[in-house]
Length: 262
Image (cartoon, rainbow, N blue to C red):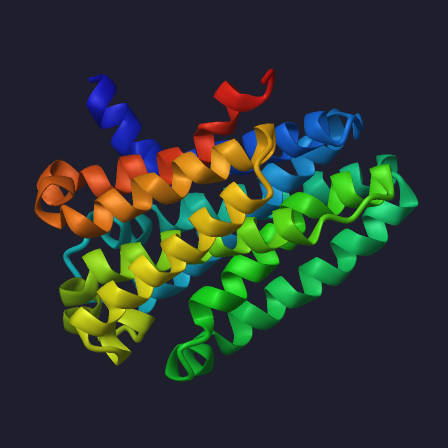
């Protein structure tokens, strides 16, 4: 029962939404800012809308796919579209209650997100889809603490982009065969598997090096995250069992709740 509920939450990207909210809370606490509950709801709702739109479109394009995520979205398409519309309307009203500087930053990021949804296929051809998503996601998380605190940290931005990028590349690596059979382009279908494994290990090494170079309570989280991703690359067979790679890979973005008070 609990396992089925958790799997449904994964299919609906609820775990990713929760991870984004926890990350925002983590960095707001580190930069000592309080954006208000409206900002957290806006971030979570926007992340869900982007993922839901992406999955609904992919499910429609891959009518022969047997992946559980796409089967679920095809089967519940009308309900999900209705929920997405209601969510969009609610978030549009909530915008009126956030600081102007956050609204302007969020508006710019929403344009970038819309561009991604439009040109996702072309980005895949240029091996840049995962990097583009990682950059927009990371800027969406860090925009609020950076703007409200009026402090900018290049090291934290680079580390979050790297961590998110490695997450996306790892998932593409694990799901390479499924992407190929469904006709989806990803960095894993465009590069040789062995080469991609080396790229992932190189990125985790770079991330660990930066984390240790600028070591603090916040970079300790990144150190743990990159270590987990390195283990996922070295021992893929263990993480493939029962889709452990999904739960643990996305679980990295839930870890900040353990580091907030350090």
